[in-house]
Length: 303
Image (cartoon, rainbow, N blue to C red; front, side, top):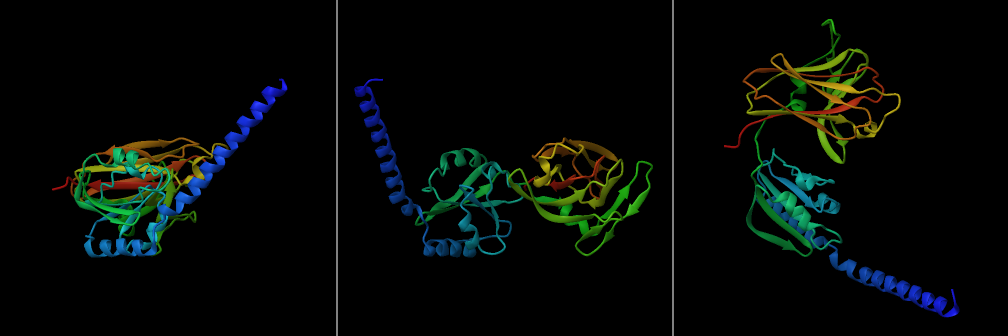
């Protein structure tokens, strides 16, 4: 390369560095304009406190609008995680979308494409500086008839061998302690970015199953979701697949959880007659790291 070419290359590199520096400067000067003032958070919180109704939920957009969480009135559920834009939120008849549309890479257009179907805005959006609050009715709403995690206190929990022998687990006031020392409890856990309040089940090992046995009210729909508690989902070595049973009045469906799976798996169950006998069970040959988050719900048509 001759001297002239080197000189032109050096000039081009210098111009590129200057452009990058100017862009960074502009970004730094613009960024403070996207911040939310304390007074705006407080004003937003006052509206939620005054207009909330039982069963409402707050959805963050973008999902990483985390600071807003601490201002949402106590008792209002807040949802915001990677992928929450498309969450059906079927338990909630009304959704408050709390957004910061001026945040860098907020992706509000993509949010609206995932969120808007079957949702209807109620009244105008309220703006508080860089915060926007909009109420929606949720057309994907199905009233909850039962959540298995909430039925745990009245359920029977036991270890069951293939020959039908049962060893009962004892209720401790917060969960059921089994003869192998493991506890079945209602806990919050994360599976593939999303938080779930679920039944925490630990495989006993071998062909023995841990079983949660309860009676359910009538429901038009039922569903089971299950996945490894996320810190164990990626395990591939020294672990075995797991099986999760969803049984209604003696008719069972089985969900297989392969090793190395970090996602929540789902199957659709039958409608539940009043007083349905439901059993949920987990087994894995090697119990090492086979701790599963199980969500079983029964829902009704919105009326």
